[in-house]
Image (cartoon, rainbow, N blue to C red):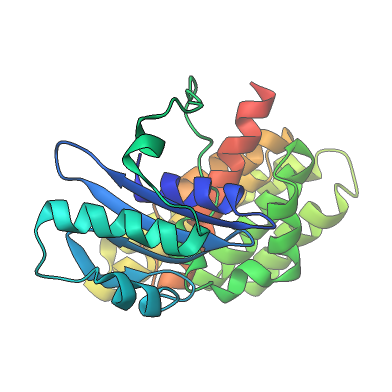
Length: 272
C-alpha cells in the first residue's frame, strides 16, 4: 500500500476517533501513521523515524521518547517499539497470546479509490482547497459538477497565459450563461482555434522567450476551446487533461489543475 493510500485509510478509520497504523514487509518497506478525527497528524518510515510529516509531525514526540523509538536501533527493535507505541496509545497490551489469536481480516478485492487531493497538498493544506468554488466541487465530485470543473480550468488557464481580456470574457460568459443565439458556441470555438493557429505562426518567427509566451497562449486557447464542448463531462475531462500539459509558471497552478484533473476523471468513471 502506498503512503497516500495508507493516509487515506487512516483518515477514514479515524473519523470521530483515533487510529494508528503500523506496517512493514519483507522488503523493509515500512510506515507508521497516527490520525485523529479524520486528519493524519504524523507519519514516518521506520527506517527514518526522525523525518516525520503530517498536520502535526510532532504529535507523538512524547510517546516516541517514552518507548525509545529513534534512529540507530536495529530493525527488530524498531518493530517492537512501534508496537509498544500502539500499547501506549490504546491502553491494550499486545501480548504474544493476543498477537497469535485469530483476527478479522478484511480483503480489499478492488483498489482503493484514488485520492482526489494528494496527501502533500493537504499537509500543509493548500489555500486554494478552501476557496468556495473549489470546496463545492470537492464536496460533490459527481457529473453535476462537470460544468464547474470546466469553468475552474478556464479561469486557471486564463490567468496562467494572460489571455486577452475580451476573449477571456467571451468564454466565461458563455460558460456561465450559455448561448445567446444559435451557433454562438461553435463560432466562438472556431475563433479560438483560429487565434491559436495565428499565435503558433507568430511563435515560429519569434525569439526564444517570445516564442515561449506565444506557445503558452496558443495552447491556452485550445484548452479554452475544450471547455466549451457541449457535452459537459467531456468538457471537464478533455480541458483538464490538456491543461496539465501547459508550461506553468507556478506550483499553485499545477496543483489546481492536477486536482481538477482527478475530479474530472472521477466524474468520467461515473458516466462511462
